[in-house]
Figure 1 (tube, rainbow, N blue to C red):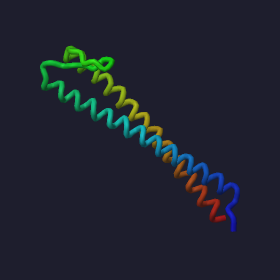
Figure 2: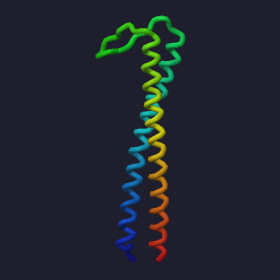
Figure 3: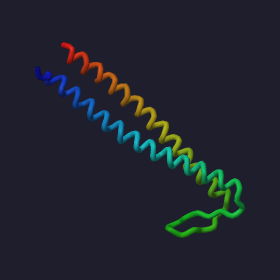
Figure 4: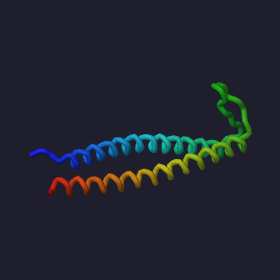
Length: 109
């Protein structure tokens, strides 16, 4: 017994969404790593008197306060991007669940 065309379409939609979700999760993981590195750098800045910034592969002495401000801005931006990813991730999960139910419904018929 073969699957109906509708079931096949739903399954291929589901596979595409799951592939998108995997790519999405990898991007989110990269952002979380970046966030962790920023937080670590901020912690290190608290305990140092001299601070350096890398500019075009050169380490340049910089004001600790300026670096701290830059890092806090980057942290804010990364936090915001992660929250956006989480919202989109939730939408994709909902779509996946909806299509899974539809596929099961079509296959029972």
